Structure formats: C-alpha cells, structure tokens
Image 1 (cartoon, rainbow, N blue to C red):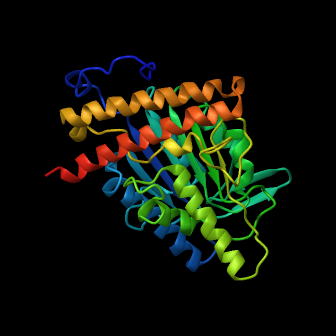
Image 2: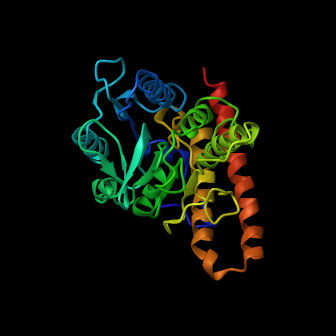
Image 3: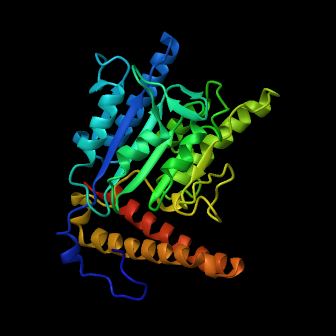
Length: 327
C-alpha cells in the first residue's frame, strides 16, 4: 500500500529487506501468412525480450516469447491459444499486490461479426478470452499492448483499475497491416521516446512516440490514415488517441515504466532505497489525487497534478544517476 501523503518514509534499512515487486513479460508473435511478416513479428518479439532483460533488468525466467515457429532462438513454445493461456497462468502464479504482468502482441488481427480476434495457430483469441484469463488477478498491475490490426476492440473488455491498455487501432474496422508495432518497439528500445530526458521511457512516452511516427508516415505520404492508436488507463473502457499527462487517459501511463520499481541490487544501496521509498510515496499521492479528480475543479486538479509529476521525475532522475554510478 502506498505511504499516505505526509507520512514519514520508512527507514532505508527496512526497505532494503522488502521483496522487490515482480514484473513478468509475455510476448507473442502470432500467425504471419508470409515470410516477410514472420521475420518482422519474430524480430520485434525478440528485440523486446532482449530489452526486457538487458535494458529493464527483468529476470530471463520471467520473460516468455511465443511465436509461430517454435524452433527459432529465444522462442519457448508455439504461439497457440493453449500455450498463451498456459503461459499467463505460469507467469502470474504467486503474484501479489505490486507485481505486474506485461503482455505484448505482434501479428494480425481480424474482426468476425462483432468480435475482433488476435490470429494465432489454431483457434484465435478475443479480448474477452484474455479478460477471462486475467480475471483472477487481484491488485496486480497489467500492461497490455496489442499492436495488431483490428486491435481497438480489445480496450473495453480489458480496461480496469491498475491497468494500461494500448492498441494500434481504434476499432475492429481498421484491419490494414499496422505501422504501430515497429515504432512502439523503437520507443521501448532506443532513447528517442524519452521526451522528458529523465533517462527512461514511460508508457505514455512510448505510446506518444509511436503514434506520432505513425501519423508522420501517413502525412508524408499524403495518405489517409488507416490506423489510430489508443491508450486507456483510467479504467472506463474508452481509449484516447490524444492521451496525455493531462488526462483523462495518460495520467497512469505517465508514471508506468517497464523497469521494475527497484531490484535487490539497487535497493541494497541505502541512498537508492530511500529514493525508491520516496518515489513510491509520490506515486501514492498521485493515485490519491486521481481518485479525487471527479470531485475537483479541473483547474485545481491540474494545479495539484503538476508539482507531483515534477517531483516524480526528480526522484526518477536521482535513481537513474545512482544506477549509472554503480560499479
């Protein structure tokens, strides 16, 4: 539970003994239909997997890649419906409050009637299928990114408290091959998306970078946009293309990073442990402010929000500086 505003920070010697929150990652490359796309889906999936371990410090045992061809390097198993659901169960076993599951989908999506599905070898999966598979999670964060065509219909069934949902399209009707995944992968694996220059990329920055790159491609080619990415993070099931730190969507994503909130090595440093506790306290105040938003005047809300975002960025920069100095 976040420390209430005004409460004293727990002594760093106590914090260092706390188990670090666990982040597990499931990356799925669905059916391709042709070699060009098979290679692209596989490359995106394995690039993100490598970044998860080397850039974000997530243990390799908590990063799973499923793909159409299970014989390729880094792929744990074929990306069938059964293996996807089994992987979710395995990765979330024993998760408690503060832990997180990240799911990223690459591939094709189609709409059949009123239902959109992620195409995999064998039976496909809908947003409702994922909703059922994730229903048992309690007080566990979810980052769900569907980069496929027709992915917009996944927003409503998957939205909820403590969740960030990102899709490449705004509806199931946008069924062209998407540009979004290449740019989203670039946002996670390069420094280009770090707009506030704090040394790491939050989910709002990654989404905004990819969205703008997609828009740029269509504008430069004088083409009508066939995809409109969405971000949803306030739990109402309605995503926004123009998500920002001013909301309504974007406020949570602004404070969510793929890096765990502090591993054992970093937390063992008393200075870092104190900064981690202070950052958690700021995040707690942000959550409390968001909970009060409906009862506040919008100007008052924005006035209260700005200093909290600045304070959070300062704590993050200080932590990043300590990480850089580590031997």
